[in-house]
Length: 142
Image 1 (cartoon, helix red, strand yellow):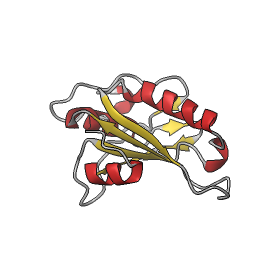
Image 2 (spheres, helix red, strand yellow; image 1 turned 180 degrees about the horizontal axis):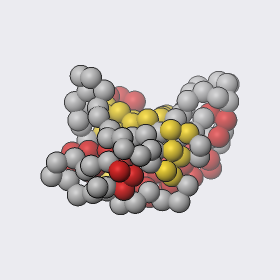
Image 3 (spheres, helix red, strand yellow; image 1 turned 30 degrees about the vertical axis):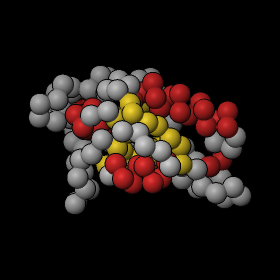
Image 4 (cartoon, helix red, strand yellow; image 1 turned 30 degrees about the horizontal axis):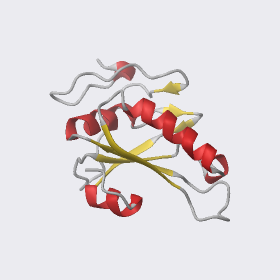
């Protein structure tokens, strides 16, 4: 069994144990949303709000922390923080967009992160197409 009681995806090694402050609900195996196709790009949500990333220093810290965590699963091609427009309510959702160099790394991260608790919140992860990643970040990660 992998850390947290879930099984790793077939053909993928078990994910590393969660870092301090992050817990995994027991006996849950992450599955993509119906119709979602695994891809190299992930959207992470419910990790922080607009009120927690008010300035560029906050954004840089979120990027640094997220990059450090994501690199445990494989090489990253791109990482971006998608904030609500200026003037939005502090409780508005912030999305973290991560592009991996290869599909197995993204799959490993998806299965390891889905449903984990971070800072008292249950993290949600979904696959997004490489095209959606590029359009939301205005960059070409691949």
